[in-house]
Length: 283
Image (cartoon, rainbow, N blue to C red; front, side, top):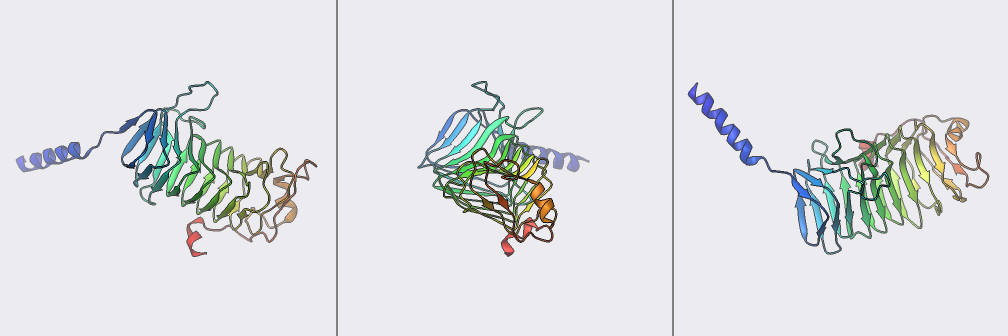
């Protein structure tokens, strides 16, 4: 009996020693190399400057306090990356970006924002309850094997060199929102469903992004919606739309057929069935 009690006491002591308190951050600038692990709680804006680099380890939870400085209805917590970010989780231990609210909702925090970043890699990340699960602008980045859910925008980008593959994007207002603006973007083997709008194509998209071999089906309002003043046509070949019937596929688009001022969405060579996002590397 004494040995059993001693063993329990040792385990309790080890647990207390091993337990690491959360890292608490307000408005913070990172200008060196840092590593996050465990739980990180943010109330403010954390900026990774040009000379800074942030590595986030598998299993880390980044929790944003829901606060709204300017009263615009969008939380003001964010992680802004101008330097380098490597957030590489695993299937068993994803990295989670989330709200700290007791009853979380979309736009509790602002976004994970890569802007002119020197390096950007997200893998096995879950981003939820933000205004934008991730925004990527004016940089090269990869986003793979990740999940974007319960946001206003799941994945948003413009003017990028972006690979996005193997991601699950669901239960957002806009699954993927983009202004192409000369982007070299390749989106494939993503599962984009159960959003209000699957793809939201906004002003100045020139039909250069490669968006193919995705599941874009079962979105509540439209699978694809052309935004205001998006007058150029968009071609989305070889995707699964939930059907192979052209008329049914076209019914899920909001484009020139609904508003003559908009461009036309075409979906040539629709796939006969859904793709498996987990097999994106096999292609």
